[in-house]
Image (cartoon, rainbow, N blue to C red; front, top):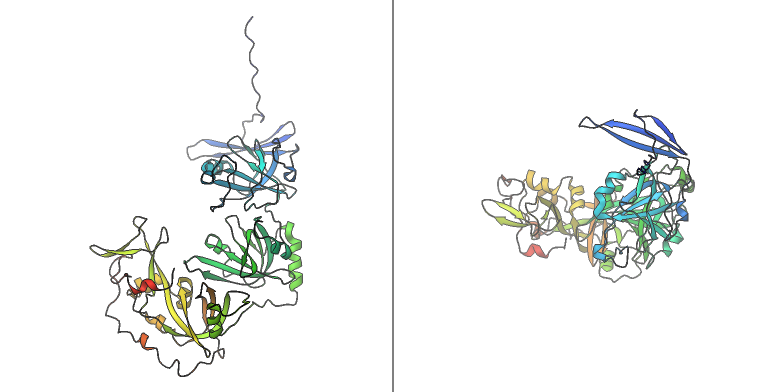
Length: 508
């Protein structure tokens, strides 16, 4: 008896020779499209529109068997930090490198999906953010304990077994929000590391720089009941909003970490944070309408904590108790700029560490870690400010000096020729004695200037006439040497930072 032939497995997608056609099989509708590739061949993608049932994300529980789900990929991110947890007990923290996705379904429910970061190239080839898929062959596990974006008991593990079939013509939301109110924000701290979504109005925002020269953005916001809250956008997220965002604009912020700062709650950005300015998503329109209604007939007045220089000194020296914040506004003048302390330094373009000069045929800079770095010239000006009450030392870092002078440090050195770090450029010297409004941060007994603007007419601070009459002796600098402009490349300077007293200036 001849052997029985094995039945041929039938395709789940009916064959069709014409690209762009609509196909039907059982309860599924398939849409086939074709695009010509650079090599003359065609690449065919099958999109599915299904009438079959799919499991709701909110019903997912740990250890459940996989059932088809229909989702949109809202965003992807890679958690960073030593506290990232292993996804299994056998996996060490050093081995746990996660690639995270946020899925949302047509009901507006969401769940995290986690893959191995080592397989990112593979997943990038099959998963596109904001695309919709019918997904199966995943594993349902317990949700992450540290910094989950969704309040869900379960999450999904996806590997190369997982199947992602593109969906078309879906009504799945494009974003996911789960806003916390002010009281909920206040309750989320300590061991509770659930990331927080928040919506509110902008009161003001400004760039800031830490003592280690990290460039941040701070945002003062309030909810519909005018409860204040501060947002810190770390360097990776500082440009999510810019100068076009003004007081009164509504921000929807996702996946922030609640922290304690000077006795108050603040929100800090994470790698998963997104921001939408004046959002128009239908799912959150009622939040937007409520914020607009509570603002009707009102004008947003940025909160300002104005202090004198003496009060600023007391705060810096910890002589003042119950200080509600560490950021202040002060109306004063620049009394002195310390010429003996370098007004700029050179930073590695690859690792942001300090560069060191090295001499061969010409002067250039080297990094202790990286080969052939390009130098980044950064302002760091040590000065003192004064008003009628006292004077105190402050530090101006790169961003505020660039804004105040209207020119970058590199332009000041390369184009204008001020190459000596211990000889102050004329545009900096000209700021001495000007009445200015300073926005300052007090941290670790140091006072850092975040923003400096010329005072408006009549907005001046009386100053002891015996204090500033002419520039201080420390500023009686020798005349500049002729033709100080460098004739070498950007990596070479005639005069470069050296080791010495300049190393004692403010840390950066």
